[in-house]
Image (tube, rainbow, N blue to C red):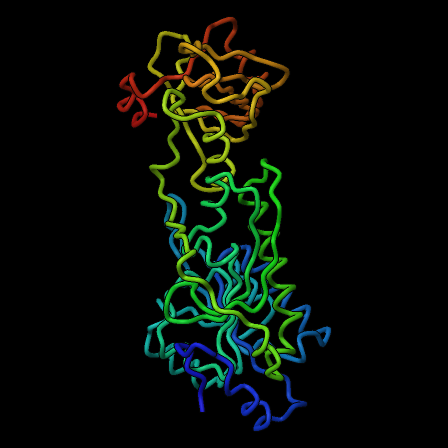
Length: 368
């Protein structure tokens, strides 16, 4: 008998499974993930399994997205999870997607007790969800039902939220809508980049999952899980490269800084700068930002100067609403990353300024 993941109470039959199975045999777990944060989760699960945590389980197989072409030569590159699975000598599956017939047959042959997903990146059909006896648990880096979707941490930071967190939830056919098993809040200080926060949340979520596994095996989690309130759900749409452009006559310093936090790593941020050398503006990548001391959106009358100044090691960019962004590190085309002071000294007395959306720099941006 299999648990139907679409039912309101996913674990009604858990105790029946437990009584039918040998309580001494380690449970068979299949892990699904793709990026480096998922590889970290797999590392922690392997360490937990070897230490006898989680009520006793083994990683029976690892599933990851297939190698993808990268770089100018389009060399096929395996995912971080793929590389770790090979290093550990684990059974590895890399189907084109989770609906692949051969993959579903191979998964059924494994007879998994539980599947665990961490940023796998593929839709899981009902046929998949019906296979593991105890269901599928997902580590999701948000406080579900908030930020369901592809980019929960990125959108949370972009929005400037004061709190985020991680959720361990059972997977149902609807995206990120399953009942919650564990959830932990994490206050935000205002400067965390997505790259650091994602790793932290996946580590926390994996630890929570390990602690909760015994309650899954013996069925006691049935009284602990809680359904999500779908009316409170928000969507976390996938980030697209076009969102990397910022214009300081349109956006406040706070908005730009929040975007830097959310888009750190990929796609990053860029803007157009006039270097005062009589040449067309260039595309500058904004590698590290902060809010200036005078940052106070809407507090200044009139439009501030677009001239870029220096304070300490950081460039000061006054946005058109009166707020100030500190640019601590940047990269110009063909140049190495540098801090604000090195950039400013490299101007050799020239006056650099930011280019607004009212100045047609589209052609120059493409050339850069």
